[in-house]
Amino acid sequence: MAAAEKSRQIWGWWWFDWANQPYNTLLLTFIFAPYFASAVAPDPVTGQAMFGWMMSISGVMIALAAPVLGGIADSAGRKRPWILFWSLLYVAGSFALWWAVPDASTSTILFVLVAFAIGIVGLEFGIVFTNSILPSLGNREEIGRISGSGWAFGYVGGLVALVIMLLLLAENETGVTLIGIEPIFGLDPAMREGTRAVGPFTALWYAIFVIPFFLWVPETGVPRSTQAKGAIAKGLRDLGRTLRGLPRHPSLLAYLGSSMFYRDALNGIYTFGGIYAAGVLGWSIVQIGIFGILAALVGAIGCWIGGRADRRFGPKPVIVTCILALIAVCTAIVTTDRTMVFLVPVAAASSLPDIVFYICGAAIGASGGALQAASRTMMVRQANPDRMTEAFGLYALSGKVTSFLAPGLIALATTITADQRLGVTPLILLFLVGLALLLWVKPEGEDEAYWTQRAAPA
Image: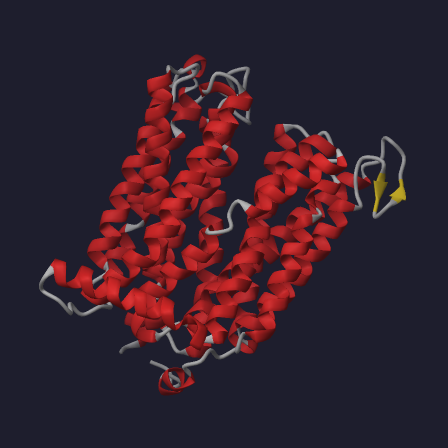
């Protein structure tokens, strides 16, 4: 294949990361979720509970269905029709969030929560199917760089989308955006139309920027069954065979277990970082927003560097290094508050705790992004090359099956100690468990013959 054609395919695959990242950045973290809890729901506590239950239910659905759908897709062969379907769910679900009006009725709140769940199902399943395309984009040495650069590109996309929303659309309680203007396009700040526009904005962003993926990334699967029923039955049988056979593949089993724990810990940092900053350090929403922008910016750089380290050393050393860095970050957080830094007392007016936490935010962005990119590469190496979509379905399952663990342990530790700072200590334990399980993971996986055949550049 010509180098130009291969490059275009890789760029098409990267554009999918750019297109889907705003769902995480804008809807899950910085714009919509806080707005829903504070303005749409009856009160913030009820709103947080509603949003949490919606995320839990959708997470269970994704965990149970991802490996099944992956197995069916591998049996049917073709992936593009599935990705198109998940894209439609993503766009429809996110666009519908426009109707999340302030002080909404019960029926409207239910509609919004269902719409959000539909969108996140489309997001997660789309990622499962597009991740399975990664092995077709390069040889063993190249996929680490490709994965890392793609994740970095996605971080930049999320950062650009966040800056646009904060500067031009999302209004604060006084009705103006971060630069002191009313939302553009004549949107009514009294009805929070600038903030509500995050839904249609995310949908439109995805619809535009996913086009290169569909234009430049070819179908990698060959239809293997002309009967949908036959593909479903075969997919379920093959999935059952894969699950029963996991104990005979200790490296894959250990990796799924390891990633289950360290990804859960990472999600705990992402979820509770802002809460911790507000509660322990007394940060404002603006400071937390700056924290998020810094994490995303440094995260993009970290992904790019991590991808090149992955290419040179392989994904396992990158994963180990990132976990150790995140353990250090958690240790720094646990030993820092407004009165001390690394357990050393500081003056009440000192800005040193803020500086340390900004540094921690940068480290979380860099290490977290590189960790996720390298984890995607490692999954490729551990998986059966002929069952790649199914493998990423199992990867999605392992990422969701313990999604309750980090929040639950943090809540328990906080309750027992009555200290928000000490409440994040369980994350260190989760990272250590993930690190220990990596001892049984073979860096090259258990199917080295496949990668040996692909060692020559395409």
